Length: 193
Image 1 (cartoon, rainbow, N blue to C red):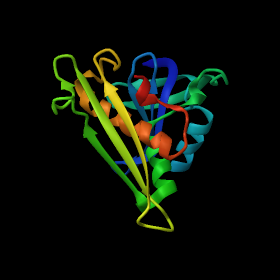
Image 2: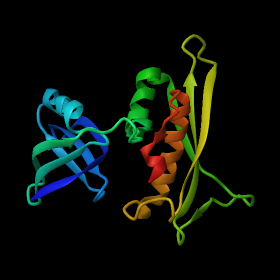
Image 3: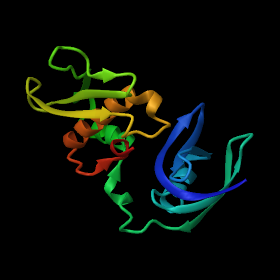
């Protein structure tokens, strides 16, 4: 079947079950599609066709989950807002690249004034705090600490994410702390869902 849509997010390339692939998410159906090939070709696809904000069309075999005949219909516009968005994967990679083994990430469920965890299973609400600590290169006893909070509610996550609201709150907290640690002022995709 032929599918047309606007790319909302891109992931990879990365190895999955000994096969290199990139993934992309469409705005229209909130579905991830994967393309498998050699890493060099996947990197070319990521630069030329599989771009956040691009309008594409492709053939999709529901039985095999194979994507073929990827075609760029229109490149993302400069003012699409897509250039102003990062994602958790890129933030985490940037932090590991910048800080290496000097990086530590901790999270905790925020507690209310009575010491109870701020979580409501009926309303699908949770609030997390993340702490990103970076050890100084020159003085191991010196830490830079970046703290941030992330919430998830039934109103600020998609239906696809609602069953996983606890993990989304934690992911949002980590993403915000990583943005500050890596000096990245752009909003993370996970903060918007």
